[in-house]
Amino acid sequence: MKIREFQAREIFARHGIPVPKSTLARTITEAVAAAKGIDGPTIIKAQVLAGGRGKAGGVKLATSPAEVQSFAESILNLRIGSESVSSVLVGPAVDIVRELYLSIVIDRTTQQLLLMASADGGIDVEETALSKPSAIHKISITLLHEIPEWQLRQLAFDLHLEGPQIMQFITVANGLLAAFLDVDASLAEINPLVVDSEGNLQAIDAKLTVDDNALYRQPSITQLREAYDESPAERRARESGLSYIKLDGSIGCMVNGAGLAMATMDVIQHHGGEPANFLDVGGGAGVDRITTAFEIILEDPNVRAVLINIFGGITRADDVATGVIAAQNRLPREAPIVVRVAGTREAEALQLLEAAGIRAQASMDTAAARVVEATR
Ligand code: GDP
Ligand code: MN
Image (cartoon, rainbow, N blue to C red; front, side, top):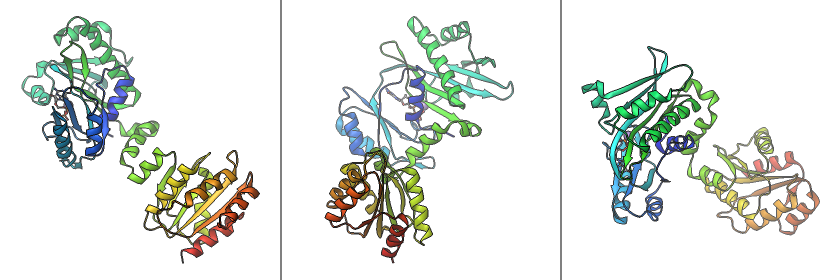
């Protein structure tokens, strides 16, 4: 499984590889905002899974705010390979003196890892590999998964690096190996690894492919992909501290506690209804979070009624009830609401709701039956 550059950059940075600062932007406005603090040229890069973005027009260097805006727009409208560009990475452009190539792959013939490097990196490295194979230097990595320092030092000389760059190169190569092993990669590549105008090495591209057979033990990698692909509503929910998953039914659910949320969905189905979502507002949900939850639920046009199921545990039921009452005055549209309250401060919560004109009950079963009825 491939991951996107901005995600690979984070993993590389975690392993000590110097990576320029950058911000992910999903809209033109976000891209312009991300470029605001940058003094000097700005690089804008399409975040797609395919390589060859530069040649496809997906990497652009902007020298003014107007260019940031127009380049972000054109890149966000591109299709690269089979993917429409839905985000760009925005950061200060590195002043490049030289472009090198560095990667680690699995060499199936020797059944070892292979480090490959070239002094001629950049977007034409594939051609170099074909026309001038001797320009690609290789080090076989033994099963001890360590590269002897003398070999890296020799390689650094072969790449015409000098002075402090030698130690920097050793750090980058060891970091790339550590990242490769950390995520069970089948490929880790920095193309180009650049020498900047201050003579320092920086990774300005990052490619990581994770071995699909290892995904079962790399849950964080699978999550990266899921987080990127989530819908705007799911994203908004996550940013507000809500766990939300959209489903296809007509009954919106707002529940505190993941276990209770699942039980609520079961009881709704038991009564012949279909939940429109899973939603856990979490512990200590205040007015703001409950309001956001309402908005997210009611944004879904399929929702015809909402079941709020509050269980007072450490979070007191009356506090959640107060939140529900306040949020109820700010609903984006009308829909029947059924409330169930139980647990800590249940009586107080019921009283508060009653006083606000919201009927609530203590039985989950009755509440579910009522909300299903309300959708008929
Ligand atoms: P790829 O085409 O998908 O491999 O995307 P890269 O991230 O490798 O970018 C392609 C090319 O754009 C690089 O080889 C560089 O020549 C150029 N480029 C990328 N980032 C920068 C940067 O920060 N500054 C400058 N000057 N050029 C860059
Ligand atoms: Mn590249």
